[in-house]
Image (cartoon, rainbow, N blue to C red; front, side, top):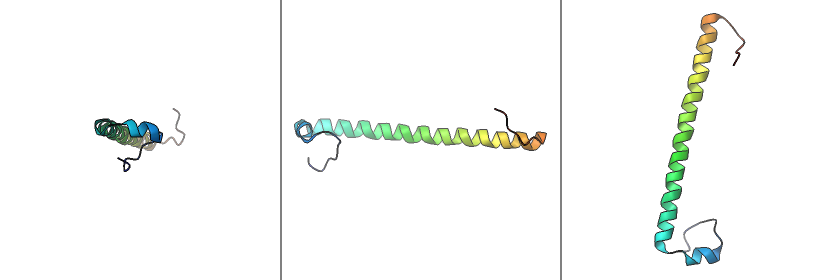
Length: 67
């Protein structure tokens, strides 16, 4: 039980049962997975925007990028 690292105060952690800990851990894992997925998606979108912007500049010969 003491192996579980949480940011809760010790007296609250002592009251948690194994099921609670497993639930919290699975919730955190799900949140982390979602966060990682969102980051990857954001990076892909950002890369696409930069790539399309550079391609546009190369085609038109413009060096200024107006949003």
